[in-house]
Image (tube, rainbow, N blue to C red):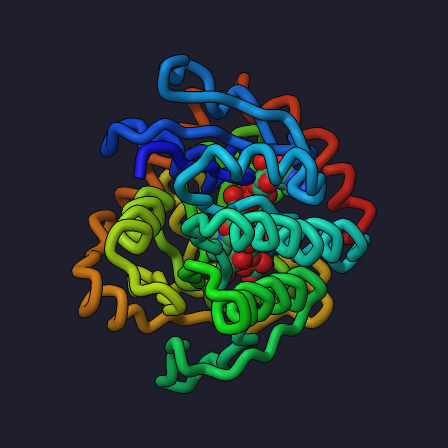
Length: 332
Ligand code: NAD
Ligand code: DAU
């Protein structure tokens, strides 16, 4: 394997993965990205031209996809519409990119016999009760609840069917909530950090009791590379770092770290259909592939993320006003 195609490489996890690949392998990387509101070329600046190429385009463009996959050894597919709140407002782009886009890529990959890794989410399994001991495993039943998670679930099913029916050489990973640098300010942690920096009180949906299972984005990147190199074709791997926390606790940690009273937040209108709790059991990945998370101290990872947003206002400032104005329109 010498050349990989990374779709959605100008987004949050995609760009972190590209930086990780540049630092940990000799691979050549081509990024294919449409540069939607969530894509940012500044996240990819400074990469060596002899090992990196950026292609501006849509994963639904079959001609473009065909020409890129013809000259690649493996595809790592991140490109997606990724935000639940947006999917409740306007689901159509989620159907187009997450379903039709994935279909377009796997059709080309099967024609060329190209190794394919599909990036997905724990949200395909629906949610768990706050008080039950159960966590998601690879055997959990698919029960998506939002337009976002339904289209991600559908894309997983397409990949599984292409493995079985056409021999597509694919693996799938379903990861929990990522945090770290280069995350769009629409998402929970960067939204609250940049709100506090701007003197706006953090906004918690509902009572702030929903639980998310946090993993540092660099641990996600390491897991993906390990699956690409050592994963078994046709297998699904859940990625998680045992990072369950209620949203209210995360906001209190941020307020404390940023020198504010820990109750200086507001409760706002809940997200319709808001999933209660996600929790990942990543035993299979740890046992079969030997992956372990490195960022096990959440407070330290959060502090580093706060510092990154303090130091990189030029990166996030252009997104902030329009994002907050969108949220105001939704009562959040
Ligand atoms: P993001 O929204 O930050 O980035 C998505 C990227 O895809 C952007 O650069 C965007 O321009 C690009 N894109 C969108 N539509 C496209 C199209 N039609 N053609 C080409 N490029 C297109 O998303 P993210 O948070 O980095 O998520 C990346 C992937 O990881 C997604 O598949 C998501 O479902 C999955 N995932 C995310 C998380 C998380 O916590 N963020 C957790 C688990 C899985
Ligand atoms: O679990 C993986 C998923 O995590 C990914 O598949 C998605 O792409 C990613 O966006 C994320 O989905 P969530 O809906 O969990 O993430 P979000 O950052 O939107 O919200 C995290 C939690 O915080 C959720 O319970 C809603 C809540 N929230 C969010 C925002 C933006 C708030 O309480 N206040 C807010 O302002």
